[in-house]
Each structure stands twice: as structure tokens, then as C-alpha cells.
Length: 194
Ligand code: ZN
Image 1: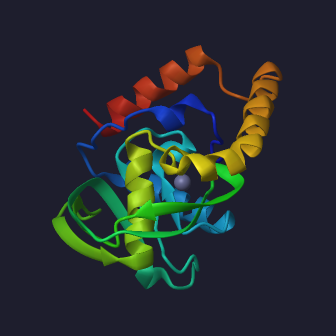
Image 2: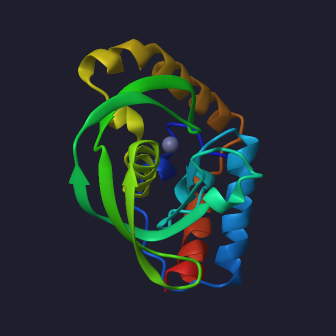
């Protein structure tokens, strides 16, 4: 699986709720965990690998061996937020950018799990930060959209470079064409959201 980089338009899409948990979805989740570990990430949203559906995976340790920390979260809703703190964040869709982002210190989330059950989670600190970052992705929001003006200015050059590189990839045909993307997205929707 390839992680999409900014400014791929799929990262801006509002992800669709998932209607059925099936083997195909479980296979997608396994592939996402593998991609996340290979990229040294602690969280990955489905739209980052081209599937704009409401799913993300996380493991706050980032270590594949610690699989009891793995969570695959479907259709998450944040019910409550408490406190605020600023910390450094990175994102697999922005490989070279690290920046300080303000997030709630703790959150309560309701979500569906792969066994179809609906569960509530209380997350604090790092886990709450990862979850907020990933839930933002599912709304088409990237962490750079959350930066203060000063911090944004610091990373602006890096963002400009990424836009240029994306334009080059596009010209070289390394990025899926708009027409093929449309077809692919319609297939995904049919598979997971109808
Ligand atoms: Zn991210």
C-alpha cells in the first residue's frame, strides 16, 4: 500500500461511514497496520491509503510486536473533549514536517469495532492526540490545517516543495488520473458504504 502525500485531493475528502464489517474490511485493516509499521507511524487513516471511508488504525507504541495496543476504529464520533495541550506532531502524508499542534488532553469517543460492537473509549495524552489527528483525517482535515500562523509560516517552504513534487508526479503519470480516481472511489463506496 502506498501512503498518499499532500496535496493529494483524496486527503481533503470527507470520508463516508462504513455500513458493513466484512472480510474485505478486515483485510484492508491488516494491510493498513502493515503499512503503518513499515512507515514507522503510530496511526493511519484509511483515506491516507486512498480509501475515503471512516476507518483508522493506531498503535501508540508504533511496535508491531505490541499488538495488544492495536486498535482499528470504525465510524468514530468524539462525544467529549477536555483540557488542552500543545505537542509535536508528524504525519505519514507529510513525511518531513513536524510541528506543534494544540489538542484536547482527553477525549471520549464512540466507535464501531471489527466485531461489529459499539464501544466507548476514554483516551488521554498521546492516545487522545493520535485519535484526534486520525479523526481529523476522516473529515478531510490535516494537521497543517491546525497550525498557528507562526508555525505554519515555519513549514510553508516544505509545503510548497510538496506541492511542486506532486505536480511533477502528476505530469509523469505517477498519480492516478482524476477519471480513474473517480471510478476507484465509486467501487470502494459500493463495497463498504452501501
Ligand atoms: Zn496524519
